[in-house]
Image (cartoon, rainbow, N blue to C red; front, side, top):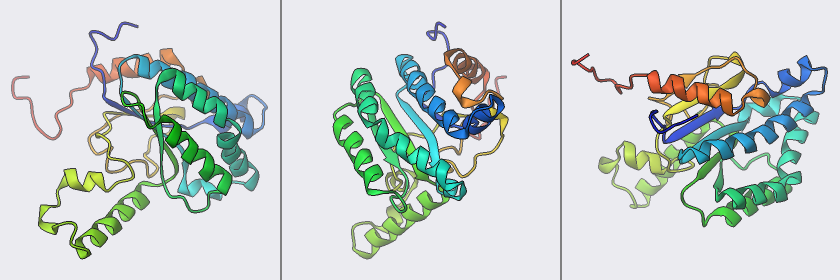
Length: 240
């Protein structure tokens, strides 16, 4: 699809949802759905970046996902470490800078090592930014940011009277522009504690498609819908 005459978001965010249900409906184990979702994420990410969209954020594992079965959680964790070489090759081929947002607690040494290697290996890239939300929660991000602000104020590194939205944003896990388009696959219509600060004026899109089937054509549909939206950011266009 020709994107030249369409509104192109700067920052697209995904709640990657429906992997398990995709697998269950096909008579497969849920882990197979996570595997297919991971493969689709790479393919879809490359396509999105090719359309001159600079930032992608993906909600892959929430702080609440630890409530799932030990087997499923272990499989998701191992995906990261087992696919490390493939992830690095993908990032280098597409010149993607990848980093992780979330807390480090409850993550194994192998997972933390893989995360650090990915961040170190790709930090030289500047034009394509992939924010991987892993062991992430929007509430905890705001709490953690607030704690850092309090510490800096107490240490004399920040004047509380200068604190504004731009400065607060720098204390979040990553200093990213706000989300323009937030897509949650599988038909569920809620944020589930995802990037609450950054999604404040995002356009939401809720396709019924499970994430493993959310391909390039499905993303094109999302962009066509986004192009139709009138983003006023709280204002009114009195000319229309």
